[in-house]
Image 1 (cartoon, one colour):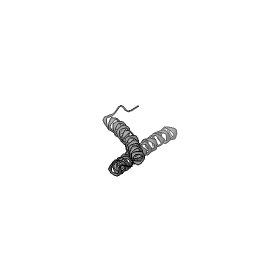
Image 2: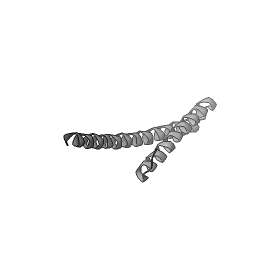
Image 3: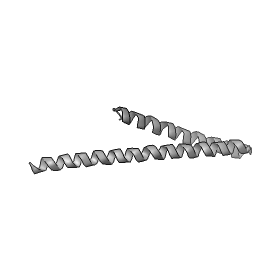
Image 4: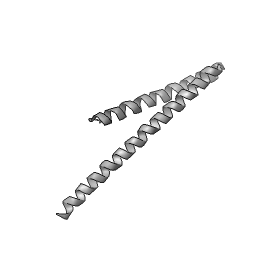
Length: 82
């Protein structure tokens, strides 16, 4: 899983963002069902915030994994040249 500090921060951030996304969705739905506008708006805002944070951490993860992949490919190519 994530053993380095940056990986741990990424995992925790993605987990929190995911839970925020779900909580916001539920709050928005409850607000819609009860017709309480501020609960619905707050839920949608929380879900949107969770989505944005989740997207941010996913982009960071993708970039990190691309760098790691390039480094592995480069190391394998160097081994093949010997």
